[in-house]
Image (cartoon, rainbow, N blue to C red; front, top):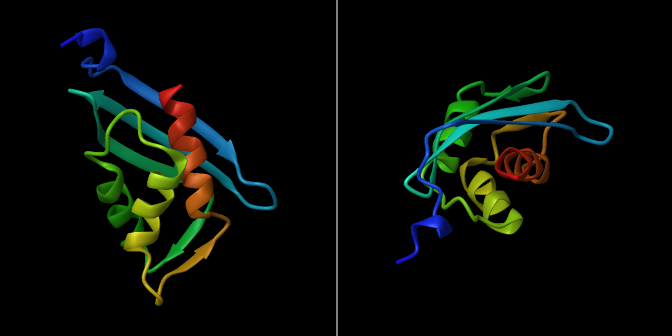
Length: 103
């Protein structure tokens, strides 16, 4: 196996994205053994209930470093229940900011 194909360092990664007609979304994460780890979304958006943010972070943790935009959106959408209100943030916006951090 070629280990250069799979990032194993735990260096901090950071990404920012201003969602069109939305808010700034920021992500800080690490890649550990080829998977997203310690994912922390933040920004000037709002979520109701606020616990949704922790669920979104948890949904992203463990995904492979080469995850696609579609897979990222699916992971976020899987934790957004019908009772969740999102203001200034979208699943697509989260996917973009994570991919920016990984680039």
